[in-house]
Image 1: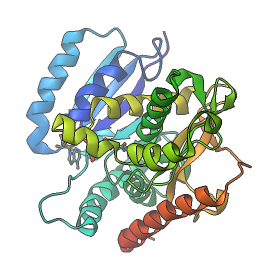
Image 2: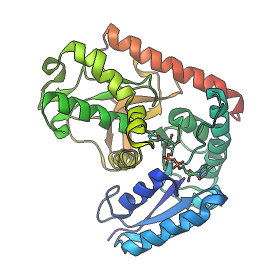
Image 3: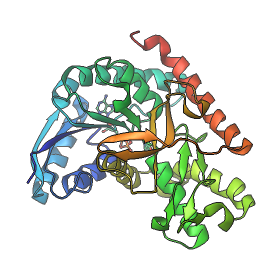
Length: 327
Ligand code: NAX
């Protein structure tokens, strides 16, 4: 058996946490041979509820759980962590403008970024799930000058998985038959789920669907899926978000399949003309714990316009919180 790795989860008593922790503990994320120490962070009023979740994890008697800690202090929860999954965030309250939401979260993610900088493993892999995920990730990154900026990512894997499911349903194939799908940009309704390079059993996916369906049904359905779940379930996506967070970390740590790629929110290096520095979802391949942007894809005018619209939103989000960056 391997030596245990440390996985921090914030917002661990919330709804995503309630699905996520059990998937990590059962080995779905890092493999059935990888023991984990769970280091859980919550705000003080939620510590009692968190204790209940810990009792349930204990009661599963998972073979891979090598320890569990809880805390309401980021420097304790992030001590020596190899993986940090930042799920807890401030939800939008009544009358709160987008700017207020960004600022409230900036306060949380700057503290957590500093703590990661000070106490996490130097190789920590950080995934931000809490919304607005891309910009929260940027704030944490900006507060962690001693870590590589590329260690900070944001989750668009749920959008990627939603797009796979829609395309599979429409074409009567299985999601496993689809490769090379991309979600570009922000985890918001401006995201651009792109099938122009996608393949179904190795054949171009775009040839198997009607253009009208792609533009007028597929794209808005994927963009609005979160709202549709809230309407149907009376609560936001939780198990699917947790599952996608597990997928994101597993792919990052263990790699993408040959000939395929995934979508991850990562710091833009200027590829495809996207503003450098913003956390933007790109097509990436992963190998040996590192990701790389897929280069050289042909971008038509339709795609370019959508990639730029979601880029614009991320630039505006960054500008709204820039005054809170330490440098
Ligand atoms: P919940 O409100 O059920 O849980 C959030 C938990 O975070 C609460 O227990 C709260 O006490 C805790 N928390 C708040 N501030 C904290 C802090 N400073 N430190 C530690 N813990 C803190 O929300 P849940 O449904 O679990 O969703 C969590 C976040 O994920 C939300 O911001 C949500 O918008 C976001 N989502 C992101 C998705 C993505 O694809 N990137 C999809 C799903 C989800 O909507």
